[in-house]
Length: 607
Image 1 (cartoon, helix red, strand yellow):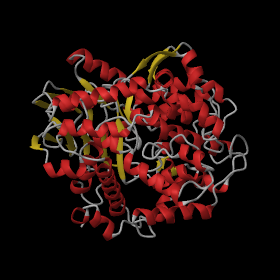
Image 2 (tube, helix red, strand yellow):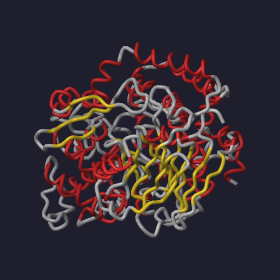
Image 3 (cartoon, helix red, strand yellow):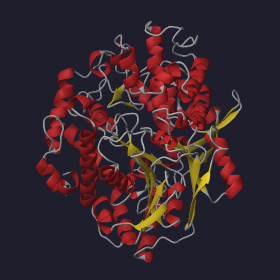
Image 4 (spheres, helix red, strand yellow):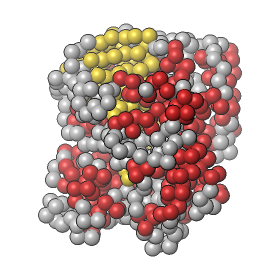
């Protein structure tokens, strides 16, 4: 098939059996690739009520039709599994160069099945595929292990690796690549760890078949030219995602002291401009990227080098913890990366613990003597280590704040900032109703990348609760994640304003199949509804209550900043859900109707 590697690689870790099978044409037609393949295999092959940490769960690694081709940002790879953090659908997107090598090895998906009896790594070099012993690498940090493979196998091998966090079963462990890129959310690294897979290393030399080489060259050049000519390219390349830090602070969206406010009095110490001046060495991009948003940094204070921090880490490890020192955030970033735990969930967990400490719910006895107050940098570093090692309070926080707050109680559930067990990423939503709805209904839990609707809140009125806002959230949910399906990066469209219609000619030239955005968005809706059905299948009583946000956003108005005194009313939260369910074609409890499933071609699959 044009645009595809053409094969699915299955690795039975329990038996060591490795097989390949052709990528089914109907799978390509209905789910395209990347996140679509992951959702399909998860729903179809992982048994109902499988233990996320048991042998029946699978880790599905998938590329897309754009992956590894000369299209801006065509370096995205999807990791899908049943989440050990939420008990529902987990999908994490990772940039870098890993997905290109998967395609060059002739693969579209890698499916890890069962549990290995001993630590191993998966070695792929074109058609040579082996499970190799990794006992000597177990317990080591991600940076040292990736360096080991680069030195042992060669720079052309691309590596996806877990750290001690994944080995120790931290519920939000991540998978690291290229010394600073992550598949971060939902515990994909946790599943890789329980399967005893330390790393996947891959290299390929095969060509990706293209339907029309001249049309592909022309379409690719048009996309690169649009990026080069974009008005925002200079600033985006200079600051990357940190460009939004000051904006979020100004509009009241920067999470501050466990999301109790959206503006931080020490915010300037974290702004992108400050970071660029103090620690950034150079810019770093993923495969085929003309607008490198990665920042490679050096902190003289801590004598470290690190990729980042990105905005999400700045928000959750900086202002959310009351820390105003960008070098301290960089150090926290490096610790999390090397230990292999998600900075977003980790920052949330520590923020919740700090609030518990300041309210007297946790004491020094609970914290192993740590003075766990907002702004305590050294306590933050120590707690990151404890989480990754599951030591003391860290063992509780490693379970995620939904479980931790339920165990501690004493009202701490009200300021545990999550949806469906997924800790919220770095946008405070006290009075941003579209963004709040996007978090509430996100298919993996409270994550921003599926529907970044906060700019629409500011455009039409942040407190408005109207059908148009709901329609915007749904459109974004159907459209934005399609980049994860195609194997490309959405940031050229989001940040540089690239005309999305430039992508369809490229896709057609590569695959030989004409697809409009209307068609692609229907695929997006198909995946969205399939994963919703997965949540319902795996969680008894799943419905509206699972979509509710933290009470902090409808009960506690911020006392400072741009959103001081502002709140989303509880009745408006339910009104948003009512409109959303109606527009999605779901029941009043948030379950897709039979008619909706039939319309999307899902009736037989979910039966």
